[in-house]
Length: 380
Image (cartoon, rainbow, N blue to C red; front, top):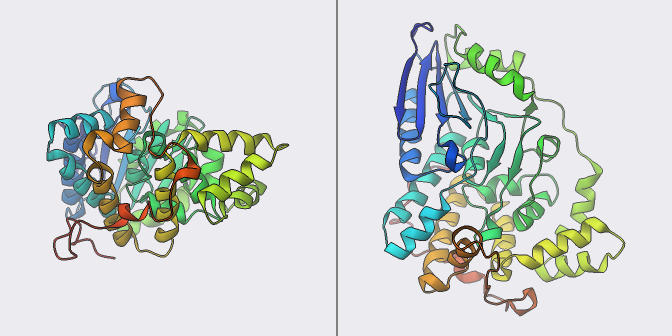
């Protein structure tokens, strides 16, 4: 066993890794960018997880974000936002520069998501603060997903003309009822209570209690991953399902067949303030990407994680290649909301009513054969 009093700490790019006792610790340490993931961060996370997977002395892994630069375990280090997602400024510049690193990013990020979902040792995600996009990809496959009173969770990709990737089709489609369609299409931000209700978190702890729990994990004398699982079952017991009436209300609209049917029903509910607000949100999103996203969630409901990630890899390729680079919905969304910040994207087509049947189908066409697909090695 590694001596817990002599932790092995290493900083790789914006990832800090630490071994204490029988646990491996990962800290996302890019606070100025809200811990947005770069390609190097994806690679460093993958390297650490593979090493600990094969290390007979490591029986448990935990991951967190920080909002302040500091050495893990020191007085300077503290919890903060988990991760705001992928580095979308990098996406924009990479397309302009025709940088092949963009393709590498999505392939390697999705492979990392698959690794986490299938990790053979307990994996605990401390989902404090902002947990969005790629941050959801790092945490939804965890054995234990801990949220706090500060948690702000979302898959907001439709806001930039994208779709909820990183396995979003898989884990959103498995939310109760048609909550997955609602979260995917709107990109709505939810808190800890809703995350628990919707099956996107396992337990809530106060933010103030997280540092002590983090430290405790490194002091456990564990003999195996099974031993770690027993400790988790005793000390991190998930609360019972808490299905609420809100889910039935969501289902009333988001179970409908097409995007237009959903929006029409919401807009016709004049006395329902929530419905009016939700319709207004959908009217701001890319009409074609709403159709793509609805199809994604419904296809993914019957898919394995591996097949869903392969589908999403095809979809993200088409987001950047189906149309000339600067004419794509994704580049336009990033330009309007992140680069130029005029918050006035020009979508094509402009209205939900103008999306023609079959227009979304092209996003699901794979540019690869099964034998050449970059994620062909993922096991179901």
